[in-house]
Length: 236
Image (cartoon, rainbow, N blue to C red; front, side, top):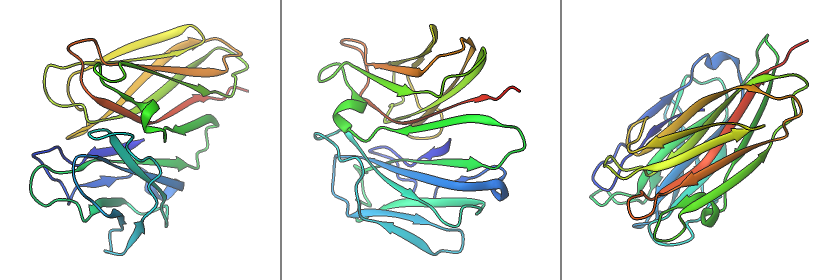
């Protein structure tokens, strides 16, 4: 998972691009373009380095209410390009802006064998937290069960975490092993966070990853969890 924030109500990064590491080895590439339902827009455009593009007019995740996050999803081709750009067509060019984040999910051909899984959270009413509306959301994602104890790497994309003191808590758990990350700002530009944790010594037979997103009462931020990946190395 790689990505960049595209802006906030006061910042607009139409020219922002996402570089893809080891792009020559990418065999599949999925993209999400997220925005906040706070103004008008028409559709999503995913732009190749040569200026050609893919228009996406199918909204995979409509925002369930005003000021919630929506996103478009698209398989991108060719998969081996070094970078992509994205923008919301018809969105405001003056503040308050609507664009929020551009996230890519490259799948690689590798010599080392991994178990990889990915999930995209399309139901806006189930991926969004805000203490005044829905303070806690839980996503349980099926995991191909390891045959031995493994270290599980999990990444989660959070959108609309404003750069202020308001926190959001994300707990990632698998097989009784868990970590909690508290965010009060974005990690990958405005307003995208890509949270990465390694859950060490996850037991054999573990069949799910549980993500608990919480906006603490009276002080929490409004944030959406739009996708996740998880992987572990296969052992002979």
